Image (cartoon, rainbow, N blue to C red):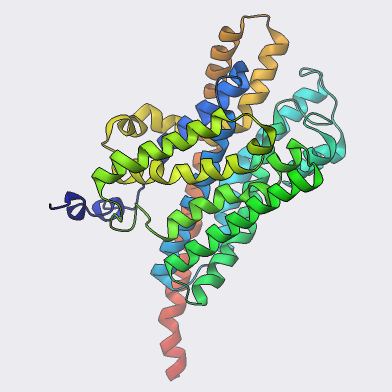
Length: 383
């Protein structure tokens, strides 16, 4: 029987400009999962899954972009990469951190600041500060969520160079995917050693970069082998829908059902990350399928666009609503979501979009200079 997936080119090939379907929608869903858990529904909503999706997505997207750059230019300009990351991440990060800290200093949030705690946040070390000092000590209420951003910053700092070295050594996509997955296995073994051998606390395992980076690397593996945005499908559409998606969903359900600490802090993170493979493949390659259509609806995509600022500020808003009102839980949650969206929209138009435009201008200037140098090189050689 003819497999009609062979007639469907990868999404990137079908678009005039490179764009990956469903990613903004996945960001929106991930944020809403995290928000609901933080808003008081943590017994029913698995907020940790939202973070795992964020991690997986970051690894997939960053590696896809690095892969495209290397395939196009034969290298990766690390300076340009880090500049883009700085302009994308730092302005909203330090703005929200500053506002939350000022509100705390003014007594509006009911906590006291400690210089070393705020310094750890500013230096993107808040995850390891939590391991040593707990979730709340010395920081603006609500900014404890910055631990996950620290994990991603550590990844952004080290991974581009590692990827560049692997490409220069001539590793193929499957070989790189194998290297990433072996590293994920090593991280799982490290978590097991910490939990079973050293009686590590939840904080030590849950927030540290060395114990959570595997969720990002699973996304990296998908980006280099079987990338649904760049390559032809390796899995027939019917098999993906009938087998792999249900298997992924079942794996997620099992990861939620088992409530033992030892499982939650070791194997659960690995199972959840692995279960995201069919979800991402289906959402990106077949955005017209059923519920995946909702990931590409305009307002859902817009929430995904705001998701970074929303994530930065939503817990501080939730905490403030709890301090300043005596409303029922549901009313506080709805009001907090509305206020968070309004502030995130202001940050998006006032900070993020101008920074994005600056990134584009700087990239254009850098590309123009490189072309000029290349044009001058033959003339200098013959002079």
